[in-house]
Length: 627
Image 1 (cartoon, helix red, strand yellow):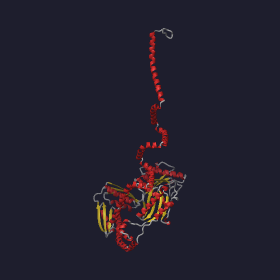
Image 2 (cartoon, rainbow, N blue to C red):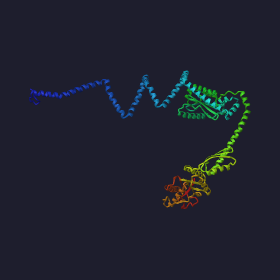
Image 3 (tube, rainbow, N blue to C red):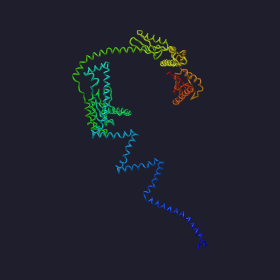
Image 4 (cartoon, rainbow, N blue to C red):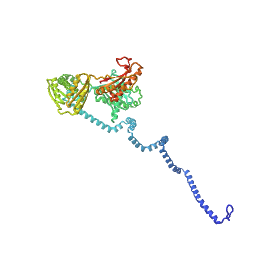
């Protein structure tokens, strides 16, 4: 019979209940234990299977890497960059063909995108490669390159020839239109003198020319590779020439490149001389000629230069600064250019030129006589115009003549506008007095109507500017509502009367008040100081008088000079005198005086014509500046 732990008997029903209770309590734990065991078995299988483990870790690693990139993108790049470079390099060494095949589909798109973003950098990077490739292709398969470039070069040459012929036709037509002009006669004379037809002279104004020198210059460095001169006497500093030519060519090409035009500088002209330039490869040739070169010479120059580039361009591209090895091979083509001579003229042409001199002299006499008389009359009329214009300006009392004078022999024509009939009569009287035998034609308009205030204002300021340009007079006009007030000063009464007469003649001035001080304005004011730098309260009346003077003469300026006696050191006296003068200037500025009218100078010395030991030298004096 079942019993408890302490030996108490229990019935069977109670034992069954206990078993049921135990099953209820243990079953969930058993189920969980079975589930845990199943999961452990699954995890064990995944850990020992690479495919399953990779599938589990990739999302975790990806998520962690994304979080790390968002937190520190630069740090992640710094960590991965060396690994990526090394991975790409090792993979390329292992299987270059596979890398090329993998990158080929994206290379064209990448290059196109880079060109759209940075076209200049891409062009700069590809230019040396393309240049070397084209040169190598020309060396290996010249005919193939010619066939490939023929469509482009053919159309370019056709366009160039069309433009050249159009310019030639225009030039010929222009010269034919000038047949009856002075230039046409001079051309005929020149044609007779040279023994050629006028048509040939139109096409070639000056066929003969001379080659002075030829230079071959390294393009990247500007160093002279080889040179040849016409004669030993004509030689000069070749290195200097090459440097100057390179500087000029680089300057011009740089500006042309900015405008988008890839052209080269082909010639430099000075007077009757030229420097012909041709550039290709790593060098360029410069030929100094006098006169216009013939087509034959230009062709020879280009052929010689093309031969140099085709034969020696590789050596020139590797030039290290020592031209002694290349010069012996390069100088011969240059010498052939310098020794070029055009075909000599025929004896018949020289005979015809000699027989034409009498005709030339006769034509010069026939043309020179009328031409000389015409130039003489033009100069005479111009002198008379200037003389009459100056006389009219003086009679009107103005600096600029408002009346235009035209002289044609004995005829004098006047054009312009004056403000009153009085001024018109004065102008006519002046012209008749200066040129009594001339026939006068007056086209001067008279503004009898009251002039506009702006016009009167302009005339007032013009007359004032004319007087202020003179020495010994300063006028300040104020015009308002037909009333004119003139203030200022003049050194004598004669100038005052001149100013009054000039302004009283103006139409539109109903009231004139001329208040000019006779004599040059002066200011006798002295600011005394006892010791050091003192307040200016005791000098208020003196400052009032200086202020009134500057307001009465707004065109004047002052120089404020500080002085001292011999007591104290020179450096201390200089500081004190400057500070005293600055105090006076600041006080005047506070009273409304323009600072630009006040100059300050601390002299540190005594006043002129005084006892250096006197305490009266502790002062500030003022000088009036009129200019």
